[in-house]
Length: 473
Image (cartoon, rainbow, N blue to C red; front, side, top):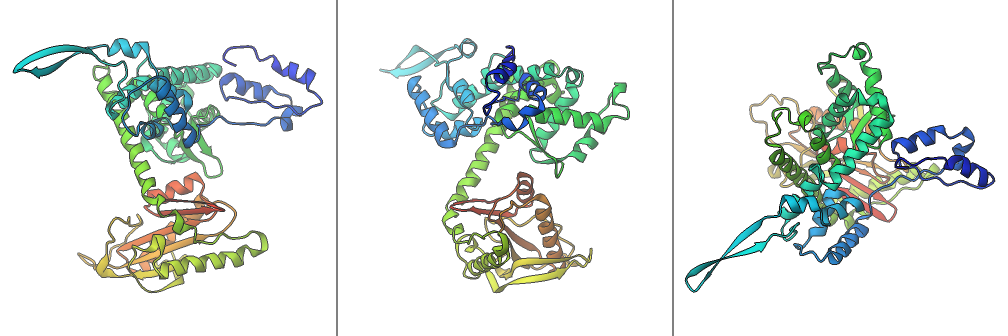
């Protein structure tokens, strides 16, 4: 690893041939090749353990200890703010908080502190701290430097990581620009992207290289497989959905490493620092918004525990019906998360046929809402295809729809898309102006399914054994 020989394989084979072998592979170019080079006999004797961020509790404790050890003066709540920006990566936590000589030299300024004494102004010189964490802007300044400056530790980490892995696979050095264009496209999308959409985007890119002629799809797939191998993207092969890594530092660092690609309107890099700082501020606001959103629904967790969890095997259908009945009762009595909805009539199961596609759908829990109280304050309306009502200003008409999945398997993208289509069909049948939707899944959701629900403003509810989570959009 890290340029050292990996002759440990024959050594392990020699001394541990009759024992279970444990290997920990990092995913860098060398260790990936090492894994591929292992003989088939090793296949079932290797346990892969991917590195991941610290749990939030451990991250906050590490920050508190570092702050104490480094004797830093910080604003209240710095641990939560920094956690959002580094996702619990211990090296990045240390990089932001610790002394960096390059940062010190760049910002080593003497500021004049003017005080008024006895009617006279006396000027004092007070040295500025190398990193000032007394306000959130100081934290963002340090974070921005470490992520986007060539002397920053996080920048150096990602630059080394990318260049090292490129060199481990020499073919990709010549395709570097296309690799970064795909990453830029994923970063800008900020959500799951279908493989076909990436292929269409790359077709529009001007290229003079003959190697691309007639090979677009094959080369794009090779690039994506490489990005997946070095953990920069997550590729759900069953649905061909591509996700960029959620790690926020790479979003900042990669735009600094390939600044010209991301900021083509500033070829001389005159505005580099202000552009990068503005970009970091956008990342911070996005992360802050997601956290605020999560905080708002934490109070609902106790109410969600009332939803029964299903059994498995032969009892799943019967148990599922019980869980559906439990949810229906909560809606009818306006309990927990359903308290804001002004329901009218009885909650029911409903079968409908889409008047446009003629497809049939069955909805678990449907109930009308009081039109006089629409739209409901602070509650997002589902983003679906609302058709023309035949009126200039249609009268408010809405329904609450709840889908209940009480199975052991996670809800996948196909099930979510089917539910969204059923909402559109319901809107067409009744001419609805407002559809409020909740998707409850005991086993949780696959990431692409969850993103699709969030994109359509559909409330997500999960409960698994004793753990219950909810995300509201």
